[in-house]
Length: 202
Image (cartoon, rainbow, N blue to C red; front, side):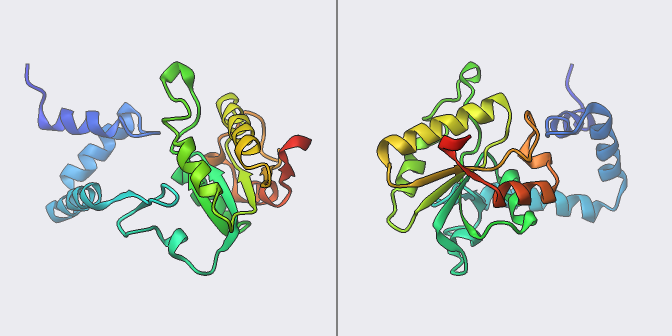
């Protein structure tokens, strides 16, 4: 039996993070009962973004420019590089106003059971970025989940092995163990960034 257009839209929406079946259903009916022009505007914006947005070659951020605005900025501190799991994590740190350095986005975290290892997280790209002469400190800002901690340890060991001259720090544990950085309030993130510790002292 063929799936209806309404069911197809509901199914597509509920695949988004944080969107359950009921929320997907409400969103679908809202989109289909609103002005047609508004629904088309949303659809066109999504298609346009999918076609034009790509990863920044410097940090992996999403952008439709040659490099993202954070990498293009001349007002940021080149000597500091913050490693985060996702674009959402980067945005939380930005909102905390606690960081003015550069970023590297892993686009995930180590998860051997799901087939995500160092190659999938582009550790080689991170190593190349951290090798640039202006970089003096790498701040590891992965979440305090088991997988986030494993990722932080792997990055720390990698940097100590190949770039022993770098200062490697970890955001402080003002963020509760097991917490996702993306869902932590910005004041807590700010304190964690400001009170970061050298990795060996944790």
